[in-house]
Image (cartoon, rainbow, N blue to C red; front, side):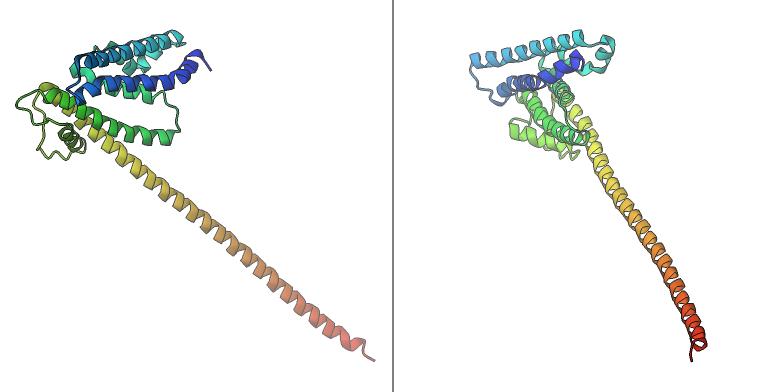
Length: 255
Protein backbone atom coordinates (compact mmCIF):
# COMPACT_ATOMS: atom_id res chain seq x y z
CA UNK A 1 0.00 0.00 0.00
CA UNK A 2 1.48 3.36 -1.02
CA UNK A 3 1.44 6.47 1.16
CA UNK A 4 -1.41 8.14 -0.74
CA UNK A 5 -3.75 5.17 -0.33
CA UNK A 6 -2.87 4.92 3.35
CA UNK A 7 -3.58 8.63 3.85
CA UNK A 8 -6.93 8.44 2.05
CA UNK A 9 -8.06 5.46 4.12
CA UNK A 10 -7.10 7.18 7.37
CA UNK A 11 -8.82 10.45 6.48
CA UNK A 12 -12.03 9.23 4.79
CA UNK A 13 -14.07 9.54 7.99
CA UNK A 14 -12.58 12.95 8.80
CA UNK A 15 -13.36 14.12 5.27
CA UNK A 16 -17.00 13.17 5.72
CA UNK A 17 -17.15 15.21 8.93
CA UNK A 18 -15.54 18.19 7.20
CA UNK A 19 -17.99 18.00 4.30
CA UNK A 20 -20.90 17.84 6.74
CA UNK A 21 -19.51 20.89 8.53
CA UNK A 22 -19.38 22.82 5.28
CA UNK A 23 -22.98 21.95 4.45
CA UNK A 24 -24.14 22.97 7.91
CA UNK A 25 -22.22 26.24 7.72
CA UNK A 26 -23.92 27.03 4.44
CA UNK A 27 -27.43 25.62 4.95
CA UNK A 28 -28.28 26.70 8.51
CA UNK A 29 -28.14 30.48 7.83
CA UNK A 30 -30.37 29.94 4.78
CA UNK A 31 -32.92 27.79 6.61
CA UNK A 32 -32.88 30.03 9.70
CA UNK A 33 -32.60 33.58 8.30
CA UNK A 34 -33.22 35.22 11.66
CA UNK A 35 -29.94 34.09 13.22
CA UNK A 36 -28.09 36.68 15.30
CA UNK A 37 -25.07 38.35 13.74
CA UNK A 38 -22.49 36.41 15.78
CA UNK A 39 -24.08 33.10 14.81
CA UNK A 40 -24.01 33.99 11.12
CA UNK A 41 -20.38 35.01 11.45
CA UNK A 42 -19.57 31.71 13.16
CA UNK A 43 -21.19 29.72 10.36
CA UNK A 44 -19.27 31.75 7.78
CA UNK A 45 -16.01 31.00 9.56
CA UNK A 46 -17.03 27.34 9.65
CA UNK A 47 -17.20 27.40 5.85
CA UNK A 48 -13.80 29.06 5.63
CA UNK A 49 -12.34 26.47 8.02
CA UNK A 50 -13.70 23.56 6.00
CA UNK A 51 -12.28 25.13 2.83
CA UNK A 52 -8.85 25.40 4.50
CA UNK A 53 -9.01 21.77 5.64
CA UNK A 54 -10.00 20.55 2.18
CA UNK A 55 -7.17 22.60 0.69
CA UNK A 56 -4.68 21.10 3.15
CA UNK A 57 -5.94 17.59 2.42
CA UNK A 58 -5.63 18.16 -1.33
CA UNK A 59 -2.10 19.53 -1.06
CA UNK A 60 -1.03 16.59 1.10
CA UNK A 61 -2.50 14.13 -1.39
CA UNK A 62 -0.64 15.86 -4.22
CA UNK A 63 2.61 15.62 -2.25
CA UNK A 64 2.05 11.91 -1.51
CA UNK A 65 0.96 10.97 -5.04
CA UNK A 66 3.61 8.90 -6.87
CA UNK A 67 2.51 10.42 -10.21
CA UNK A 68 1.41 13.96 -9.51
CA UNK A 69 0.33 14.94 -13.02
CA UNK A 70 -1.84 11.84 -13.30
CA UNK A 71 -3.26 12.58 -9.85
CA UNK A 72 -4.16 16.14 -10.89
CA UNK A 73 -5.94 14.95 -14.03
CA UNK A 74 -7.89 12.20 -12.23
CA UNK A 75 -8.92 14.47 -9.32
CA UNK A 76 -10.19 17.59 -11.06
CA UNK A 77 -13.32 17.82 -8.82
CA UNK A 78 -11.10 17.97 -5.74
CA UNK A 79 -9.06 20.72 -7.40
CA UNK A 80 -12.23 22.69 -8.17
CA UNK A 81 -13.30 22.40 -4.54
CA UNK A 82 -10.06 24.12 -3.59
CA UNK A 83 -10.04 26.74 -6.35
CA UNK A 84 -13.67 27.87 -6.27
CA UNK A 85 -14.08 30.91 -4.01
CA UNK A 86 -16.77 31.04 -1.35
CA UNK A 87 -19.24 32.98 -3.48
CA UNK A 88 -22.96 32.42 -3.07
CA UNK A 89 -23.76 31.45 -6.69
CA UNK A 90 -21.09 28.73 -6.49
CA UNK A 91 -22.19 27.16 -3.23
CA UNK A 92 -24.34 24.56 -4.96
CA UNK A 93 -21.47 23.57 -7.22
CA UNK A 94 -19.12 23.35 -4.26
CA UNK A 95 -21.58 21.14 -2.39
CA UNK A 96 -21.93 18.78 -5.37
CA UNK A 97 -18.16 18.64 -5.81
CA UNK A 98 -17.76 17.84 -2.13
CA UNK A 99 -20.21 14.96 -2.55
CA UNK A 100 -18.15 13.60 -5.45
CA UNK A 101 -14.91 13.89 -3.49
CA UNK A 102 -16.39 12.17 -0.43
CA UNK A 103 -18.05 9.42 -2.49
CA UNK A 104 -14.83 8.37 -4.19
CA UNK A 105 -13.10 8.05 -0.81
CA UNK A 106 -15.76 5.68 0.59
CA UNK A 107 -14.91 2.00 0.08
CA UNK A 108 -17.97 -0.13 -0.74
CA UNK A 109 -18.66 -3.08 -3.05
CA UNK A 110 -19.23 -1.95 -6.64
CA UNK A 111 -22.96 -2.77 -6.87
CA UNK A 112 -23.71 -1.37 -3.41
CA UNK A 113 -21.63 1.70 -4.17
CA UNK A 114 -23.64 2.35 -7.34
CA UNK A 115 -26.96 2.05 -5.50
CA UNK A 116 -25.83 4.23 -2.59
CA UNK A 117 -24.22 6.77 -4.89
CA UNK A 118 -27.24 7.17 -7.18
CA UNK A 119 -29.87 7.28 -4.43
CA UNK A 120 -27.67 9.43 -2.20
CA UNK A 121 -26.91 11.83 -5.04
CA UNK A 122 -30.59 12.21 -5.90
CA UNK A 123 -31.57 12.95 -2.31
CA UNK A 124 -28.55 15.17 -1.77
CA UNK A 125 -29.16 17.22 -4.91
CA UNK A 126 -32.84 17.66 -4.08
CA UNK A 127 -31.99 19.01 -0.63
CA UNK A 128 -29.04 21.16 -1.69
CA UNK A 129 -30.86 22.48 -4.76
CA UNK A 130 -33.81 23.44 -2.57
CA UNK A 131 -31.62 25.35 -0.16
CA UNK A 132 -29.68 27.03 -2.96
CA UNK A 133 -32.76 28.21 -4.85
CA UNK A 134 -34.39 29.37 -1.63
CA UNK A 135 -31.28 31.38 -0.80
CA UNK A 136 -31.31 33.31 -4.07
CA UNK A 137 -35.07 33.54 -4.66
CA UNK A 138 -36.42 34.47 -1.24
CA UNK A 139 -35.01 38.01 -1.34
CA UNK A 140 -36.54 38.85 -4.73
CA UNK A 141 -39.91 40.63 -4.39
CA UNK A 142 -41.19 38.97 -7.58
CA UNK A 143 -40.04 35.50 -6.56
CA UNK A 144 -42.54 32.72 -5.81
CA UNK A 145 -40.24 30.41 -3.83
CA UNK A 146 -40.37 31.82 -0.31
CA UNK A 147 -40.25 28.78 2.02
CA UNK A 148 -38.27 25.56 2.20
CA UNK A 149 -41.49 23.67 1.46
CA UNK A 150 -41.90 25.57 -1.82
CA UNK A 151 -38.24 24.96 -2.63
CA UNK A 152 -38.45 21.21 -1.94
CA UNK A 153 -41.60 20.88 -4.06
CA UNK A 154 -39.96 22.77 -6.93
CA UNK A 155 -36.75 20.75 -6.61
CA UNK A 156 -38.53 17.38 -6.76
CA UNK A 157 -40.75 18.48 -9.65
CA UNK A 158 -37.68 19.69 -11.53
CA UNK A 159 -35.50 16.63 -10.94
CA UNK A 160 -38.26 14.21 -11.93
CA UNK A 161 -38.87 16.29 -15.10
CA UNK A 162 -42.53 16.77 -14.12
CA UNK A 163 -42.36 20.56 -14.20
CA UNK A 164 -45.77 21.65 -12.87
CA UNK A 165 -44.81 25.30 -13.26
CA UNK A 166 -46.50 26.47 -10.06
CA UNK A 167 -43.06 27.28 -8.61
CA UNK A 168 -40.15 28.52 -10.72
CA UNK A 169 -36.98 30.58 -10.23
CA UNK A 170 -36.71 34.06 -11.75
CA UNK A 171 -33.17 35.12 -10.77
CA UNK A 172 -30.13 34.20 -12.89
CA UNK A 173 -28.61 32.24 -10.01
CA UNK A 174 -31.87 30.37 -9.44
CA UNK A 175 -32.14 29.47 -13.10
CA UNK A 176 -28.56 28.23 -13.01
CA UNK A 177 -29.50 25.95 -10.14
CA UNK A 178 -32.58 24.82 -12.10
CA UNK A 179 -30.47 23.97 -15.14
CA UNK A 180 -28.15 21.87 -13.00
CA UNK A 181 -31.06 19.99 -11.41
CA UNK A 182 -32.68 19.36 -14.80
CA UNK A 183 -29.52 17.86 -16.24
CA UNK A 184 -28.84 15.87 -13.07
CA UNK A 185 -32.42 14.60 -12.93
CA UNK A 186 -32.29 13.29 -16.49
CA UNK A 187 -28.89 11.69 -15.85
CA UNK A 188 -30.02 10.04 -12.62
CA UNK A 189 -33.21 8.80 -14.26
CA UNK A 190 -31.12 7.22 -16.99
CA UNK A 191 -28.84 5.58 -14.44
CA UNK A 192 -31.77 4.20 -12.46
CA UNK A 193 -33.45 2.90 -15.63
CA UNK A 194 -30.22 1.25 -16.75
CA UNK A 195 -29.70 -0.29 -13.31
CA UNK A 196 -33.23 -1.72 -13.25
CA UNK A 197 -32.85 -3.05 -16.80
CA UNK A 198 -29.50 -4.58 -15.89
CA UNK A 199 -31.05 -6.24 -12.85
CA UNK A 200 -33.85 -7.74 -14.94
CA UNK A 201 -31.42 -8.93 -17.61
CA UNK A 202 -29.24 -10.52 -14.95
CA UNK A 203 -32.24 -12.29 -13.41
CA UNK A 204 -33.40 -13.51 -16.82
CA UNK A 205 -29.92 -14.75 -17.67
CA UNK A 206 -29.68 -16.51 -14.34
CA UNK A 207 -33.09 -18.13 -14.88
CA UNK A 208 -32.15 -19.14 -18.43
CA UNK A 209 -28.87 -20.62 -17.16
CA UNK A 210 -30.75 -22.63 -14.54
CA UNK A 211 -33.19 -23.85 -17.19
CA UNK A 212 -30.33 -24.86 -19.49
CA UNK A 213 -28.63 -26.66 -16.62
CA UNK A 214 -31.87 -28.45 -15.74
CA UNK A 215 -32.40 -29.44 -19.38
CA UNK A 216 -28.84 -30.78 -19.56
CA UNK A 217 -29.34 -32.76 -16.36
CA UNK A 218 -32.65 -34.16 -17.65
CA UNK A 219 -31.02 -35.11 -20.96
CA UNK A 220 -28.24 -36.86 -19.07
CA UNK A 221 -30.78 -38.72 -16.93
CA UNK A 222 -32.70 -39.75 -20.05
CA UNK A 223 -29.48 -41.02 -21.64
CA UNK A 224 -28.61 -43.00 -18.51
CA UNK A 225 -32.13 -44.48 -18.40
CA UNK A 226 -31.85 -45.50 -22.07
CA UNK A 227 -28.51 -47.17 -21.37
CA UNK A 228 -29.99 -48.90 -18.31
CA UNK A 229 -32.94 -50.10 -20.38
CA UNK A 230 -30.55 -51.43 -22.98
CA UNK A 231 -28.58 -53.30 -20.31
CA UNK A 232 -31.82 -54.71 -18.85
CA UNK A 233 -32.89 -55.91 -22.31
CA UNK A 234 -29.52 -57.59 -22.78
CA UNK A 235 -29.86 -59.25 -19.38
CA UNK A 236 -33.36 -60.47 -20.26
CA UNK A 237 -32.07 -61.85 -23.57
CA UNK A 238 -29.14 -63.52 -21.79
CA UNK A 239 -31.53 -64.99 -19.26
CA UNK A 240 -33.71 -66.39 -22.07
CA UNK A 241 -30.69 -67.96 -23.80
CA UNK A 242 -29.54 -69.48 -20.54
CA UNK A 243 -33.03 -70.92 -19.94
CA UNK A 244 -33.05 -72.44 -23.42
CA UNK A 245 -29.61 -73.99 -22.88
CA UNK A 246 -30.72 -75.44 -19.55
CA UNK A 247 -33.87 -76.82 -21.17
CA UNK A 248 -31.74 -78.39 -23.94
CA UNK A 249 -29.28 -80.03 -21.53
CA UNK A 250 -31.92 -81.32 -19.15
CA UNK A 251 -33.15 -84.29 -21.39
CA UNK A 252 -29.59 -85.53 -21.95
CA UNK A 253 -29.00 -86.08 -18.25
CA UNK A 254 -32.38 -87.60 -17.52
CA UNK A 255 -32.32 -91.49 -16.77
